[in-house]
Image 1 (cartoon, chains in turn brown, green):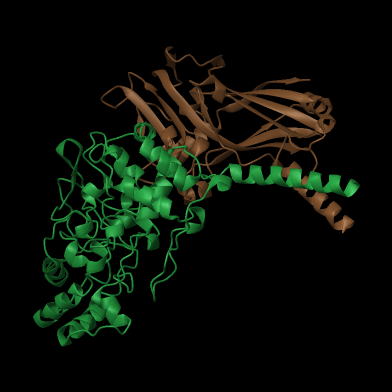
Image 2: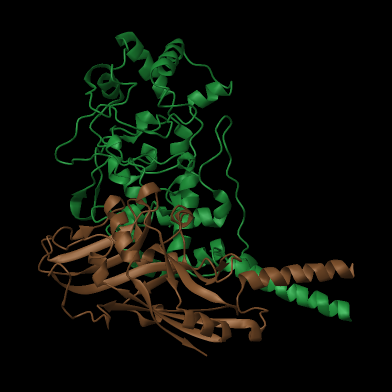
Length: 254
Length: 350
């Protein structure tokens, strides 16, 4: 009887550790991770009212930049499998600073990279009415062709071919070859790897350079396409550029 | 003593785990929920439903909340367009006598409002199948500028301002929180319960009635000419097909292709159920046919072949005048008068 209870206890505790960071995890063995997502243009923090110029010589101003992240993982340097953090999705909004920070804890150890998903798993695109970050009222949901908008970039440009002079890219779609879910992996430098192994806390600043939205894997001028509000081939193309925007700009250790 | 502590720790950890696991997807407060469970009955001979009721436990209170929402104009911008304005019970929840429905500021929709019954068996919704889950369907008409023209936040604010709704949400979900998820779950409960399976046809299947000789002959015609797409017992196979209709140049609706981006889906629309067909006129995705006979005649004489026209219709349907006469009599046996007079589905008392 006693053994059974003990076994049960161990089981429950271990499930708890795996699923509920913060509960029953020994403090001395944990690494607190803080991620700050930043929006930049050519290395400088995004300013909404400022006019920028992309690599095609097109002017642009940004009025909205929002995207979903999820499944954040730190990758151990040995082949012990991925350390999956959780299934929590977060909606980053360049206009809402409180949405820029993600905090969680993992077991201390040697890690050599961080990885996260951009977008919402297909299963969560087909499972009906959701709440929290996935509430359709957040404005990241297509009501006429069910699915989440994974990323949204809006602004204005003289080169826009939309009558209002706006450009608007809503990138989404979870089906087959037009899937827009992307996983970003960012490697730590050898020095960062050494430091994170010894640290109790790490703060990562990850920046997304909006200039690359137009020009990275694909060349996508504003004049060429100013408006995208549906899943499909174009959405997948923009998703490629979007996922290439991210890099680690700094890591601080404690 | 030690054992007691261990048990206590176990209970504590277990409770913590439980709380965590239900917190993400659970939209109702289990501990406070005293709602009355309700059962979804699958009519004899029907397959299992597509809608996943396990993610939205049916309750009397949830259903009644959904019913109130369905008939509430506050879900629309100017208050004039509840769901029920285009989905009228006496028309089997289609729009009576309207090729296209009209919404906010006298604007027309671009498609004929589909009848709402047996939707729990549909894999996807809308003529183009763009909606992949019953729960999120209401968001389309609510936010469409030419239909209810409202935004989600405003709808929720209007509901929150009404103490009656706060009471109903509490009864349905265990506490008074009002959000889009709960609103949509409640609406789904009401709409999923709109089951129509008690027509004369059903009674004949159950051995409670018999077809007249003409109806029997019409049934034979139906089975040989129509049933491949309008498959029993739902009278649709839930597929998308091009039935040889020309494009209406004012609307330029290419159907399912807009959803899939696949040219092979050009001009394909969802096969509608033929249940209650005599209540749901006009017919076709844009309501261009004003009688059942006109639809049958389209298949007899007027199918226009294009690259995606359905192979079953490319040579038109060979139905004689006599067969047509009997077929129409059979189709009348699909009217479920009990369904359209069922008080549980009508506007709730104020």
